[in-house]
Image (tube, rainbow, N blue to C red; front, side):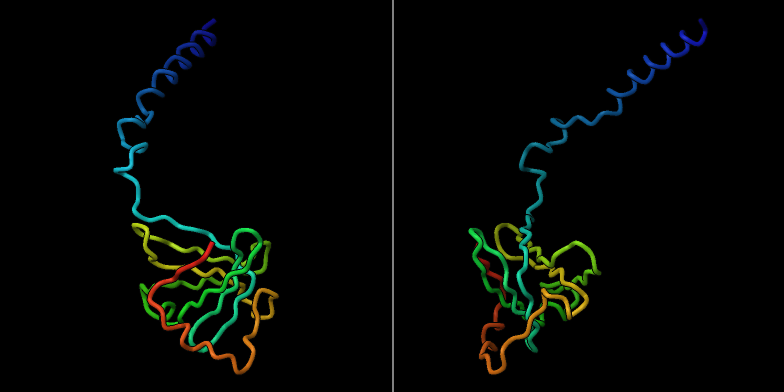
Length: 145
């Protein structure tokens, strides 16, 4: 009898604590735009990554099974706090991708997630004699989706 009484009291005590510790979602403004971040991101699957002395040429998947091309200058990745981060992926199931961050609708920075092993099939080589140097002279990334 004492055990049942103890269990009933413990149940009411636990049930009484939940409303006290629960977060009030409507009072915190989480459903209103005033507390939302000004950043948003887009994950873009990559088809190939081509290293170049001035940066990376990226072949990425657009909507409708089409392929787009983006040029990411090396200077974005060399500077601390620059516009680019290079993240090396170990072997596993993850296919290379990039995450493009926007702040207030304008390009902010990009994170390039690539395989560490340059022999992976996601890495490619730019044909010799390709004249693409001027394509790396950009300040922001504009992708076609």
